[in-house]
View 1 (cartoon, one colour):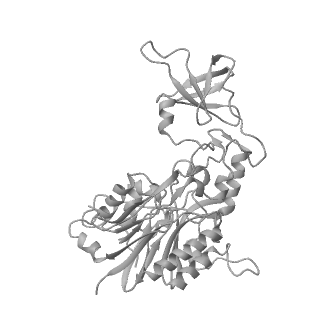
View 2 (cartoon, rainbow, N blue to C red):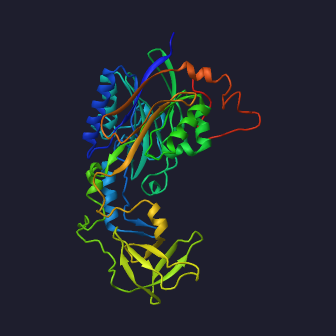
View 3 (cartoon, one colour):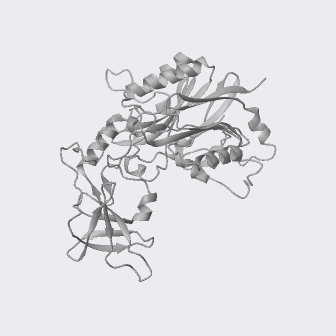
Length: 434
């Protein structure tokens, strides 16, 4: 019997409210059902939103009131699935946790709505979301079966970079793969979220569970992402689906656009404070090993500055480091407590630019790059670039190709030397599920 399924990745973007985003998810799922698709993957943090461009008013050693207000708006945009902060695992999946008196279910109803969408359309739905549990947020993926409802949920174990400020770390026990049978095809599926895919041991924990459908919802639109997905597919002899959002700046959720630190008023009614370029600034400068500097206000050094095009202050040293070097230009960012961080202008030009309100609304803050890869590492669909709405990649996949690929490579079995190398994951059985 052929082991063929029709799969899809949805390059969908978060809208300004969860109600709107859920309606868009339902519409995409209906379209998928009309095309005979069995399973569809949505991007990382699709519900709740990926807070791209947000600073949350934070610098090392400092947080400002406007940033706390921005976090409040983000916290309110997250969904409540009714799970505990530690994560109740199968007890949550099986609805064994107690409900409040008089309540039909735990949480805000998002779980029940996702289950209804999957059930009504006969499509298996996997989506990223931002989950609120207690006082913390988690980057989460849920697996929603059209017959059984939610059959699994996992939380990102390693948020990346600034994500660590706003997202808590999930338990590695949630890396548990789930099994299902769709149209007679048995699937073992699991998700690695965004840069978790750069964690070799995490990938291996999924390979060890004999995953044949590897899901990689992401926020990474770099051109290095596709080679990584091809490597994972070839390495794991699994079908890989990766979904990312494609978003222009003007279409970022309103809670992001309404809380940027621009020349407009902050949510607390105050105006952002920019350095006066005509004023001589006194500071004490400490240089790091990689030629960055930290500048602290003092009564010592003085230098003249000029306003940079992005609203930061650009300084030229009055004394070059050596006679052989030209005058050095630096870009200054000032924190709420009047401290400054100084980057060499050349380095700052290659970094992510701060949001100042001067950017073009038509600029892409994420260009997408969703893709589908077969078990030998061949690109079947994508990468899909600069398609903001309506991007649905679809392919038919023969899952027996996963087994064909095991002829010469099974990294968790015949090619593992498991007599010499062993991986243990706290709280997780990495043997193939029954």
